[in-house]
Each structure stands twice: as C-alpha cells, then as structure tokens.
Length: 357
Image (cartoon, rainbow, N blue to C red; front, side, top):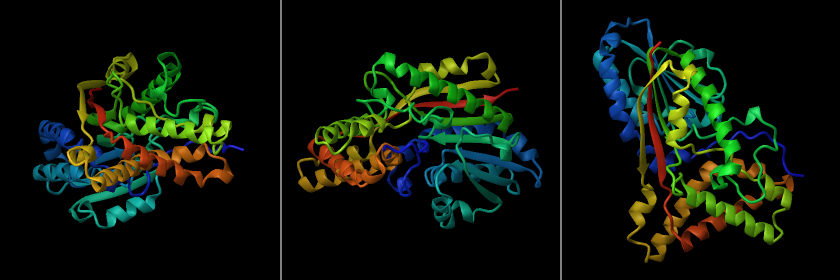
C-alpha cells in the first residue's frame, strides 16, 4: 500500500551547504533591504532600548542561507541605533536540531543585542508570536511550496508527471489556483504580523516562460527515472501515480495580479522584478566537461542538490516496503546528469512589499 502520509516537504540537513545558487540571491536582495533601512532610519533611531526590531525568515531551513544577509542588515541597523535589540525569528517545518547546530557556531550568535527564536511550523500557519511586531520579513526558495494540509492525500497525484510545471496548461490550472489561494492566505497572515511601514522581501522562484522554470532539469530527470522504474516493474502503478512534489512555480504575472487584489491593497509593491541566477555548479564546470573526473563531480553535486529539495516528497509516494528504492533513484539521477550535464538555474521574481495601512 502506498503511504498516505501527509505531505510536509523539508530540505535535507545539509541543504544550506550545497545551495550556492540560492545564496547568490542574497546579493540581489541586500541592496533593497539596506535602502529600506535608510528610509526608516529616523524610526530606528527613535526606538527605545526596551523595544525589539523583529526580522523573520519564512521557510528558513536551518537558517544558514540567510545568515550573511541578516548579518549585514543587523550591522546597518546597529549603526543607527547600537542599543536596539534585534530579534530573529526563523519559521520552518525542519527539525530544530539542524538550526541549533547552525546557530551554535554562527556569527549572528556572537553579535550584541541579538535574540533568536526558531518556530517549527509551516509558514502557512498563524504566527501569533510576531503579530503586529514584524518589521522585516524575508523568504528565499520557499514560497513555491503549496499548503498540503488544505487538500486530501490524493490531490498531489499524476500518472505521468511528478511536478505541476511539467503539466499542460489545462491540467496545471488547478495547481496554479491552489498556489494563488495559498499565497493569498500567507500574505494576509503577513499583513497582521507586520507593523505599519514594515516590509517583506521575497525571492520567489518563478516560471519565466519558454520552459524556464527553476531546476527543471532535475525535475524532468526524476520524472524519466520514475517511468523507467515502472517499466522495470520496480515501481508499482500506484507508486508512479503517487510520487509528486507539491510545489508550483508561478509566473510574475500571476504574482502581480494577486497583489492587485483589493484585500491585499494594504501592501505597496515597490518591486516585482524577474531575474535568473545561473547554476553556480554548472557555471564553474562547464568548460571542464571533457574531463571525466570533473564531469563526474558535477553530476554528483547536481544529483545531491536535487535530492536535498525532493527526497522528502519522493519518499511519500513509495510503499513502506519499497523505501530503499530511493537510493536507486538518486544514483540514476547522478548518471543522467553525467550523460547530459545541465545546470540547475533558478528563475526568480524579486518582490518588495511595504505595509502602508
């Protein structure tokens, strides 16, 4: 029997060590955050020592990816008001032990007047801990995950594809509508968390058209592998149908259209910019692919990165007595990347939203 476990996708514990492409987004976000801090410097300077400047990372994994970004932001805030306490709130479904291991040796933990809280919770849940306290909200490579708790266990299934962006337009529509509903709900929760004038900085993984959606080579290879295993009778028809990754890469148009809805007019949209971050691993290796060792090293890295964000979802579709097949899946993935090296480029829509009422 295929698992009926509720989807709750999490990154593997070493995701932050292999997310070079995701971390590259920080360089794009930082200038916008620093510009925002300059604009609100008078308010920061006027805050008393017993107030807190709250910053949150939604879908934070272990916290490492945003650490350099947050460090730069904190130092700039303390340039304005050195005695102000800054509280970092990390929200994610992942095991807190991974965050605790990161925090123990983090530069952030050594900064003066910095407090931290890790909340093991979906970012689709309410956040009473930060209600009307949040001043900066951030998320990178997280907000494409859909809320699995609002649908039945058979919702995320398909006999051929393993991810919504692989589907034809008509079949993909139900996932697009679900993502829109989920994200609308998330933004409404954010609006209650933010203070007036507070800002959200989201690097949303996006579908930029013409097959340009994030890490499509990884998803497409996994889809082919599932078909191969089914043909070899190592994967049942029920498993093939149930293996599905519950995320959706929206287009910038879908995002901007949602932000124009009347019940989200509390946000001023300061930015909605499309951009591509080239695959950090492929870029370094693309001129060395004639070397079998370099090619093998790249294939192993690409398979490892793909595994970090897909394994928890892939496992859910496997029968209880077939979980060991997961190793075969990712060994085959490494071989496919060796035979045809393809980068895991990330397409983004970079959003800056400010609560104005």
